Length: 418
Image 1: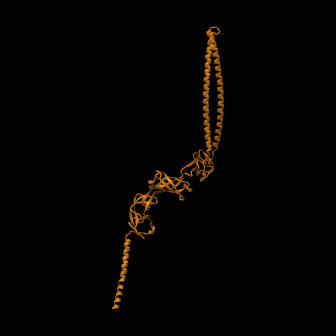
Image 2: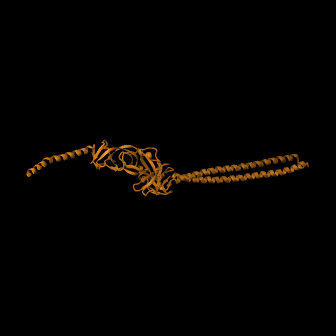
């Protein structure tokens, strides 16, 4: 009986173990197929980028790229037509106000200056000669007037004597002599008054001629000053302490009036001109703080101007620095600028997913807790920053989402990651 029972047990194990293995395989396969059936698309975990939702202070900012440009730029131009004689200073050199940059030449202007000087000297001599002549004429007229006065006074004394004798009827003076003396006195008085008027008129004439000569001399002096300025302008000098940006002339070159000679830029007066995409410019206003990155240093600034026009999809924003410029700051240096729009406290935010726009509702893929699946979820975004964006609805703290480009699988509701 013992031997019979042992044989029966062995035959049962031999009979059922293959079916157990098949059942395990079928169960595993079913579970795997069920697992695969939960997703519409499969991707590799290593090709996607994730980020977790965080809560805290969120800084809303806008980024732009641009250049450092001088706030004070001056072009030195030729005041006269001339030829470039020498270039004293080349582009890139620092100059102080009054330093010689370019020397021009124009022999005609030098000759004109000399001729104007000679003409002015001749005018001055002629004016002095005319003044001497007028002074002499005035002295002569004064002498004539004095003689007329003396003749009148002498005749007046004679008339008074004849009048006294005539009225006494002594016969010493006849009526004819009396009348002749009286008429002669009247005539001499008139001559004296006329000579007085002549002297007054001569003085007025002398004053008028002096004024006319003074005006002509002043005009000639102005002509000389203008000629001197033209000659002086042949020496092109720096008008401010600056750096020479450009000298677009060569020795021997002829330049016309108004032609550019040198470009000066004030080195310690630079601003940043940022190009901000037109879709992000709506929140940028004058007075906002800006962080300018020169690649080597960061410096603070303030928005001073927002261009009203859009050019090639960008809007120019001018930024003035509020602190000392870094040592590497120079005109035409490429910089990045981050314009601080506002700061939000105690809010949800996440690194900005690809194609996510501020103040919009978009679909992103939320990763499951086990990390094996990602499901398409509608998210309401708030204000956006350079690299981050605010979450209004649809996510909680700690939720993980895919922020890389989902265009390959964006038509599927749920994907599996392996």
